[in-house]
Length: 125
Picture 1 (tube, helix red, strand yellow):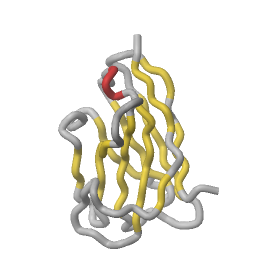
Picture 2 (picture 1 turned 90 degrees about the vertical axis):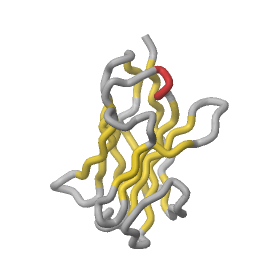
Picture 3 (picture 1 turned 60 degrees about the vertical axis):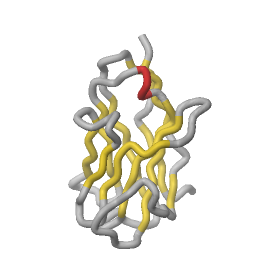
Picture 4 (picture 1 turned 45 degrees about the vertical axis):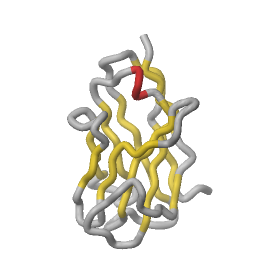
């Protein structure tokens, strides 16, 4: 069992929305630094957004205003990535990552100990 499991990907038309889920197994995500990454075919993995242990967020310029991070209020093992106004360039394998080290700010270059396998998002008409 992977420590993190993503779900919610799929095929969506440009302008559409998707909500991805990331669930932790064996630990809770309270006070973890959490990040979402994506990798398009033939391209390097890039950070989408991250949230620090105390809630400070950092968004990639390409998704700011369209993507939002949230937590499941009932489950401290699940977080979400809400993606609105999707564009073809948002296509890629989306993975979540977490780390238990307490950080007041987050960066995509931080070390993340736990990763999921990813869920595919395809934006096409």
